[in-house]
Image 1 (cartoon, rainbow, N blue to C red):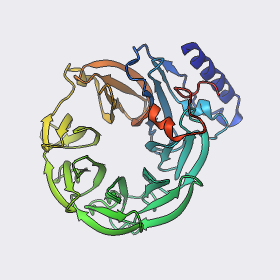
Image 2: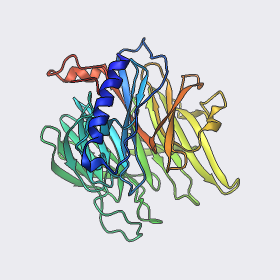
Image 3: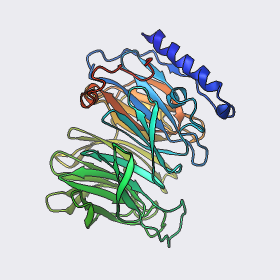
Length: 401
């Protein structure tokens, strides 16, 4: 089966090299990793990893790891879509699966690539300016947009919005204005929560979470939390966890929570947060925070118990291999095995690295990725249940078809 996968990939790559619009682009050869696949978890077929690429370089790429074969393939979008000029575009910012589609948010290219989730072949595109993050609810995609140009300006005038997209037609059907430079969003209890960052307005950052009623698609309130908000995730206990980047000087990055029953900020935990992944009641996080004391980056790999609202460890990597990671940039946790995945952006110019740790924090393997690896989404068997046209899809992308 592994030979079949590599044969199909080889044919696609040869076809892509024959297309004139690709003559000046780099086509990365898929790389096979010798890893024992988790046979006990057939429900999870693999995962996609979106590499951001440097802004202005049009180097966003898509990788895929197949649990069934132990194969890690780089730049599969190029192989699956040889006639698409410039491949994915400029800065991959978010990646999600909904129904039978895979959605890649390409920020500075002002678009969302819509692909078949089993083959990564592009089937459509959603055009939204300066798009950032995406969530789904009852047939609609909700996408945050900075709306205006990429520009650092304390007097920035263009407020952001959330676009409501019909996933059947890929058309924007409504917009809801929020704060400046809205980033991640979350859906809970019939409401949409949006982290307003004001990231372009240094030093005049935003400090609120917008609350949008999904039925009327109108902003009903804003909750004050902290400056320069970024990530959001709702737990199963009625709390919304929010990360603040801080102002990089006097106000440090911190983790906050909002009590959704009252709509009020509940408190904070004294830990810096660059990104996080919520698995059950454990919030896995990493942070890269500059210290003017040590004159270096202070890196944390923490776990927060969301029931106790306590930081239980500041380093979940237990075998001292965290020293191999230069700049952690992405995080995910396998829903069944609890393996922990951390990406390393390295020097932000050359290809990065993906590290896999077991649930005890011991490194299992690592592999080279595209440039600035960042965003994960697991391809689960459960995803197939919502697709009656293809009830028994192939277990991984690029397997014929």
